[in-house]
Length: 579
View 1 (cartoon, rainbow, N blue to C red):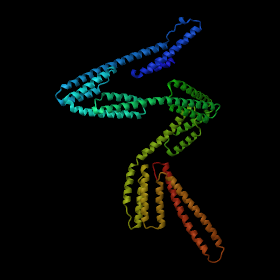
View 2: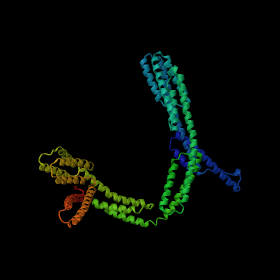
View 3: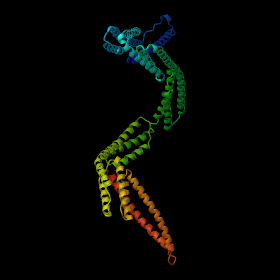
View 4: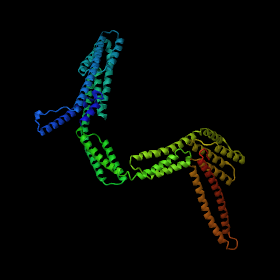
């Protein structure tokens, strides 16, 4: 206990003596109380051993001497600080007395302008001058006020200035009352107590106000002052009630921690311990968020809370120590995964290696955290190896993407010319021109991902618009527009997925049509047994031919889709190319 008080005292001596004086005296009382307890205990032990009370001698311990030295050091520092403050205050008093003397000398001035300017300077100097001894404050302030009143009321040359200053002082004091009232809404009571002293000093330093307004202003000031002090008093009363409530809350938290620690006895699963640990941590957080209790209760309730928490974590420590052998096999597997990741981390085969590393990551997830101290180290090694590869991959593609800025300029130019293009009367020429634009667009290369969708949407929407205007064969036009559609899909960020959906959709259509074809063929087999012309048979044959034509068209489209998917696969294997 003594060593703790000595440590606290040494910590206080590192701070400003004026700020910690109260704390030092409190520690001194606590230490004296501890010394007295030790003294009485030693004396009683001496008597119990057969000694006489008057023969008992109690020698100072090393800690007692150390504490006394710290008190002497504090007293010396305090004395030096007080002497410094006293010297500064004496200097300030001298400056203020000199200012008062100069103000009095202004009575004899005949130059009104010079006197006004000088008085303004002296007032500013007065405000800038530091504090004086509290014993001298009222006296020197009163003398300053009298000197100012003499200037304002007795000198004819200052009459105009007096009226202006009285009005200004009234405004300043009115503003000060507003500030004082505002303190009643301030939540930080310590700050309110500090500011109320500042405002009172400012009130005293502000000069006189018009006599007709003084009594009402003074009454309003006193009322605001009383209301603010009542607010502060009410706050401290509320603090006491809140501290009692906080004490009850903390006692409830202690009971909850005890319940968790009791219920965990015999648990053999990490999940149960983790759940219990989360409960304890949540209760610790609740404890931290619960406000303060009275000083007389704080140490006792904190010691009890810390004890029950320590009991739980000791049980947890014993549980995990028993798990170490069980988890050695898992650690071996993870070391093997780390070795494989290390072997792959410097690869530049972005696609294949990326897939391998992701599979290793999936395998890693199958072996959850053991909770032992080696686990974070293993995970850091594994993550470092993975990050080495994926950071390099990211950097590669970022650098690659940066090289696409020129392609962006090129495609912006193509799009501008394409938007300005108008089809003519010659369909073949129009067709060739659109093919030329499409080829030029494809050959322009990659652009940054953020611009890709915008440019492709603009280009292919314009292409569809021009195809719609062309006088082409219906089937030819459909194929051309389908090719444009495939170009648009393959240029999207998820181009492969979109193409797969398109292929699946075409397959579904083909399957549906094949079903209808089988139905028509069955019907035709039935009609062939009948004699003579049959209108139903003719109709079935026509529908059969139509469906077969659709099958041929859809197969052509599937072939085009597969070609585009093949291009995308090639691009994926060689990232420097793009379909």
